[in-house]
Image (cartoon, rainbow, N blue to C red; front, side, top):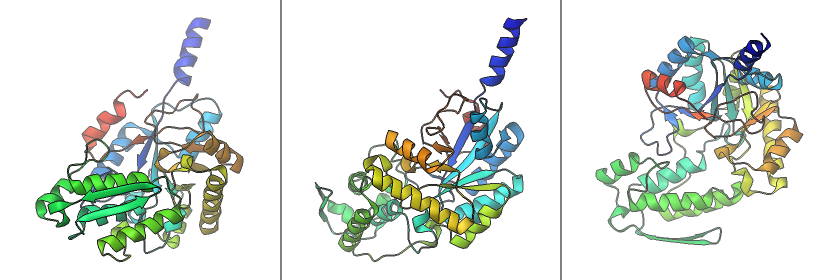
Length: 337
């Protein structure tokens, strides 16, 4: 009898939850990092979740972990960065299906006529109609030199190669793509001020001025406030400038997290209870700071389920791909370790 009871208790307590990670609900002309899901596919995802899973708020999942168990068949929905389409497209669809979500907000771009640095860099290098043939620049002590040759002029074939590139899986298909990836790799670890200085130099090289495409902007403060007041939605922290935190010292990390939390509370009147590490990049110092500041949990981009044993400041998430409902259902049901 006791053996059977122990087996039943173990089965109950060893459930796994999935935390889904989205960034954009949009159809950009290019999505080399695979962070956009089309509105049609996103709605199909929500239909699958509504029919087959128990969708719970992130705060409920964190409370469950604290209490030593995870609910059977449970899923939480999260969004990173704070793109405007989270408010204009994702929010109405989530409301339609009455499904909760948490939005991790990078506060520095709120209401600004500015793109995230990686979006602008992608556009400048991969899709500028005309670029100087020679690129020569030092970034953080690394000398980068490229000869774009015939790719200095953007034709339709080059545009298509760059647009179809999956930068997460495939080698750069063009010289422009190789240049973009090398510059991106050297810009990513820099503090925001240096990133912006280098981006200005790249604009000058490309003959471009500061501009922001409307569909690449972040939410406004008013939109974020409305989002935060909705009973289905919560707002989480995601730093001020989206740095790769583990590349920076403790003081810089602390400043990014504290200022982000302060700005979010100022806009929403609610303290952000949870954090998502930008790029999923963190170290032991980051996790310690997050706990000291008072966050209840923090999320990575490590593709693993959440169990009652999961460390609350290293919780995994599953990136939701731009796929149809049936493909999404298959993803949810595959084994994750």
